[in-house]
Amino acid sequence: MSHSLGVRQAQKQKTRQALLDAALGLLEEQSLSSLGLREVTRSVGVAPTAFYRHFRDMGELGVALVEEALGSLHVMVRAILAEQDGAEERIDRTVAVVQQHVRHHPLHIRFVARERHGGVRDVRLAIAGELDRFAEEVAAALKSQPVSEGWRDDDVRMLAELYVDRLVTTAAALLDAEADGAEGAAEQVVRVARRQLRLISVGRRHWLAEGRGKRDTP
Amino acid sequence: MSHSLGVRQAQKQKTRQALLDAALGLLEEQSLSSLGLREVTRSVGVAPTAFYRHFRDMGELGVALVEEALGSLHVMVRAILAEQDGAEERIDRTVAVVQQHVRHHPLHIRFVARERHGGVRDVRLAIAGELDRFAEEVAAALKSQPVSEGWRDDDVRMLAELYVDRLVTTAAALLDAEADGAEGAAEQVVRVARRQLRLISVGRRHWLAEGRGKRDTP
DNA sequence: TAGTTCAGAGAACGGTTGTTTACTGGATGA
DNA sequence: TCATCCAGTAAACAACCGTTCTCTGAACTA
Image (cartoon, rainbow over the protein chains, first blue to last red):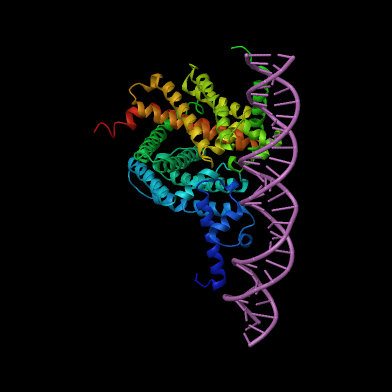
């Protein structure tokens, strides 16, 4: 893969990225369905009509932002689950990675949290699809752990979704905590998140002995 | 409390409610920050200026909608937690109540899910405050259960937040499931939610023996 | 009954929006 | 070198927005 993109294509991708960046910045304090095309182009410093050279409408830009924001999740899950430490340490590492991810990409996290149930259909679907893929990866990773021996596949999946939702919620809470002045707020969120994951982990270890059985083996 | 409201006040509250209802309906397919004042009044059939007799701006209407949507949560939690059945049956009842609540007030649920991280600050704060109160009630109810003996207060609170988040997430998922054609989708969401709550419940019962201790009693 | 209050109507304002149409001028490739 | 392509420009459009000001008439109060 050479860097031969041509001056033409290179410049185009440059302004395309500028549009994405400008939109992401403006979306810190409003939602996608209220963000205007002109607002974005004005922020970049190009003519309104230039927008159409890159996106059909704001919805399409939103979908592009989803890929940009959630594409890096996959390397993240691998980084976490590759570790061979104990469950306790892995939980701490997981929360730490989430916290540092929020610190490095606050706007992306904000965007996803906001538009996950937002007013633009295509964007909602894109986020749902991406989170679904993410949950599937987590499920695969969980399944290969010794603790999951004897688990039904859909139970593993159920657990994975529980984890994913918790991580997303934690990320959103961290964002609010770090934004809203209070000093120890972020640390408080981290501590609660750790204990919640730990409790889920405890439930996981006792699932087969106690949680199941009751319904399936009469 | 007599019904002496006066014809004047009665009529005013009537159109105020009409504005709220119309807004809630329009918010099914867009977010609050993109909903226009004129759009709402047009939907009701009154002049745009009449809006100001009831709300300063759309944000204020949004806050009113939050109270309307989340005010009924408190009777809900009491209804669920008042039951004296086993943990298993209580979980099934809880999910059933959530499902029926979603069916009866889909627009309210949609609104809360969407604006919880939406673009209007005051509305976000109102929702956060209401959910906080809700979590506090759940915590109080959990604390009075035998299983919580020996639990630290902030651990109970941590568990309560875990439950509340799960219920909110489940409600939103149910909404999407019932909207998006597929027949068994809602039932699938219900089954997963039940098992997730059950797993958390298992973790809860083994928390003191295994989850704690490790950190606090060396 | 006479005077006051006030929810809602009506018209007008300056400003912003998305989209169309026609254009320019530098990169591109034969 | 020269014709082609195409990212970005410029102007104009009708439609919509939030907000202000003035007015009306029915419900209130004294």
